[in-house]
Length: 116
Length: 113
View 1 (cartoon, each protein chain N blue to C red):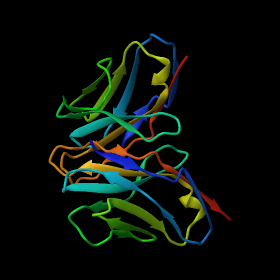
View 2: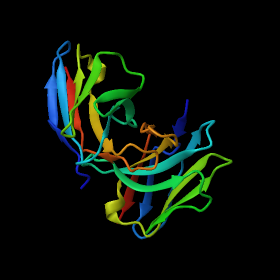
View 3: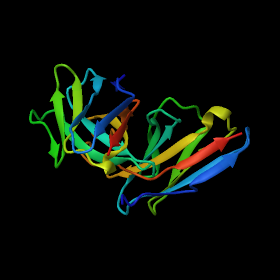
């Protein structure tokens, strides 16, 4: 069974600075997807960024980027120029790459606080 | 805005009762899945429906059941409620396909007393 681990229950950063959230996962499969979701107090899961395991290039979405280390099964999220609106719970998630596999396996989450 | 809406937003039930939670998916999304998120935890996959049939299930007992309708709406039913069923229940929809984005609703908070 696949597992996802986030070892940082809470992180804080000064506004405009950079913060990195850690995630490790365990799987025996070679084809899969990894995601970072943001869950603000409104509770809605919002997709931040995704990474296909077959791609060597790290995904980037504006101020958000990942460091995908496939051999180490590590998938960290870097947020640059942190903004107050980035404050939320962040969840790392895994999904198998086979057709029909819609199940997401989530980590425990990291609560990110932005200090003004 | 993900186009996935859930109702009710909050509800309180008594242990032993039954509850139905509803979800309206994005138009055209043929796959819906449900997740249970206990306080302070990550979401746990309950099950998935594709074209009105269950085609994947997590580690949840049979008293958790669902329905998916042709009009892109779906239901999660929980019978014989237990105190541990208190959680946020999230609905997610997508087109079937390993690369397709999964969109979430805002969830329904269930409290069992």
